[in-house]
Image (cartoon, protein in one colour):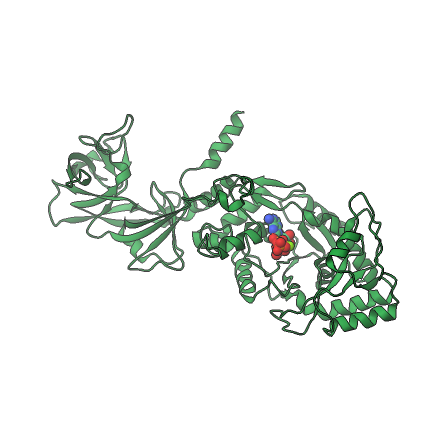
Amino acid sequence: MAITEKSDFIREIITEDLKTNKFNGRIHTRFPPEPNGYLHIGHAKSICLNYGIAKDFNGKFNLRFDDTNPSKEEQEYVDSIIEDVKWLGGNFEDRVLYASDYFEAMYTHAVALIKKGKAYVCDLNVNEMRLSRGTLTEPGKDSPYRNRSIEENLDLFEQMKRGEFPNGFKTLRAKIDMASPNINLRDPVMYRIVHDEHHRQGNKWYIYPTYDWAHGIEDSIEGITHSICTLEFENHRPLYDWYLNELEIFHPQQIEFARLNITYTVLSKRKLLKLVEENHVSGWDDPRMPTITGFRRRGYTPESIINFCDMIGVAKRDSTIDVALLEFSVREDLNKRARRVMAVLNPIKVVITNYPEGKTEQLSAVNNPEDESAGTREIPFGRELYIDLEDFREVPPPKYYRLSPGTEVRLRYAYIIKCEKVIKDEKGNVVEIHCTYDPDTKSGLPGASRKVKATIHWVEASQAVDAEVRLYDRLFVKENPDIAEEGKDFLSNMNPHSLQILKHCKVEPVLGSAKPSERFQFERVGYFCADIKESKPDKPVFNRIVTLKDAWAKIEQHSKKQ
Ligand code: ATP
Ligand code: MG
């Protein structure tokens, strides 16, 4: 019986199937990617759904490569997909399976269909076949090759298999019904001739199965009970069922759900490939990409992606999810686990003129106010510090409470300082700010509770570590990047400011030993992750995971008010 608290229409179907003992109480799902690209957040939804169901119902979960198209598939993609599914926690145990391992079985099944008079070799080319297929309102026309004898079909199919015909010269088609109202049932193609090297089968095969023919057999061989796929396959289900019924083999249940779309994001593999191939991004793992590998490099946690998938649930109708919800989920998770540190992205020097020269002291800072067990750390304080340019205005606008000539601010975990003087270069740019500090205002001293209007972050200058910080933003400026001006495509909607690189940041000493992919909250600035590839102990590089501003909370508040 179901031990799940989650509820959706698929889990309801499964619970019912368990009640009626439909599959002898077995639950077995699979995730069937085609290894022709890297996985993206849409695939994550499918993984969370399929694996989540297997886990919740004590079932099994397979990772199966649907590698039936030799021309677009590569080992690089296979390797990345295995890594990404594992990273998301999808536990397929030892079951990494390949549709190409079933080519022989599929061939045998095809021969069986020919022998039953349910499949035939057709000589129509792609164009002729399209013309004779009919439309939604008109029936198709029978192929002139439809009534070939079983012997002739077996002979021709055998020749196709041996590679005796060039690409596109013949196909094997199921003999169903050219007048069916469902176009998928109008004698669909089962095999095409493709002379191409397969990444696992080499040059063994000259015929390759179509998705519809292959998929049900793959599911059946693996004993999959619930074959969960996206909505566009709904009209293919009668064909899925037809093949399995005709073959009289184990018959899984296909169930369709709505695919994930997200605002400001493209999720088509073809478009993601274009971004990579045309160098609009640095690769599949560019931290702006909606790929799992991109998110990982950016610093997203697997938990935040899994939570996001739980929050959006599964539905039967297509919809688009606000990207702010994904960012909210990331922020919520990092708030619990990320260590707080101080980092100054646009540094300007502050000299505390009444602080003794050569002296430094250690102050105590809280690592995570959300998690007491994270403890505290020591941070150095001295006569020279850096603060962020943003936190100083020579001529403050109204309601500006941070540092400006004559005003006071508190330095986080340290003292209250007062701006006494501004030093400029010959061009008039502020290069240094001279301040005095109030020694009585440190934590533990009587002046600690003295209130000023703003608290800002800072780092001590002599021990600060130089760092590079990469500020990532959304890759597209339009909510739906696919809606472009006439004659232009989604690329015209790219955000020209999606990456800003700051090379001269000053960060507190502990960040010098940040481990690759370690995550932090830079206080008042955002969440950051040491870059997996390029961060080095002597030259740390941090990626902005997400800002602190919660756009989602605002959206929610707004919708509550309405
Ligand atoms: P294509 O078939 O065009 O190469 P695809 O995105 O469908 O692209 P697959 O490798 O076939 O890629 O997808 C593997 C599985 O992930 C399929 O079961 C598919 O239904 C599911 N999937 C793909 N995109 C999404 C999405 N945006 N939302 C939910 N599930 C998805
Ligand atoms: Mg697909």
